[in-house]
Length: 125
Image (cartoon, rainbow, N blue to C red; front, side):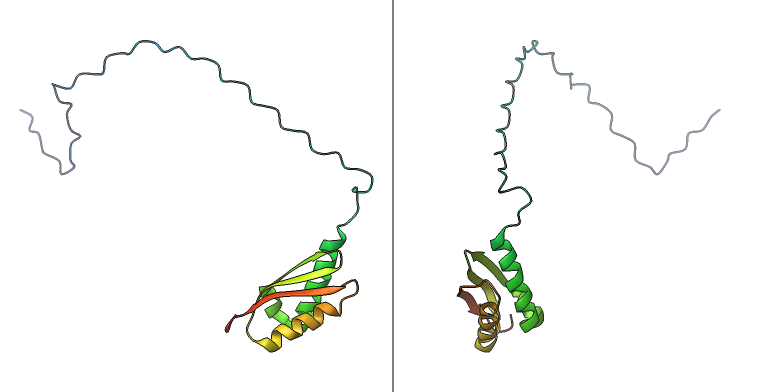
């Protein structure tokens, strides 16, 4: 005679005798998806655009380097944009004196015609 020992592991539930499998549905007809539109071609680069750096980006980078030289890590809180020699400073500085240092540093960069100060003074910035 064989004796069955019960195990401590739970057994998976048995399917209910009332549950019937779902009835198969009528076959669905599928239409092919519409073809995706081809992407628009990129504008052709003229000879004046190939290999030429953007002078506004270059000027903004020079100004940011000057800010880093004058303000150290505080320059990381200042963004610089440039357009036609006009430089705009955006961001935060902890005090008015640092704001003036930033404007003077930007003004001293070759190619800068004017500086717009859009910085905010925020203590602890």
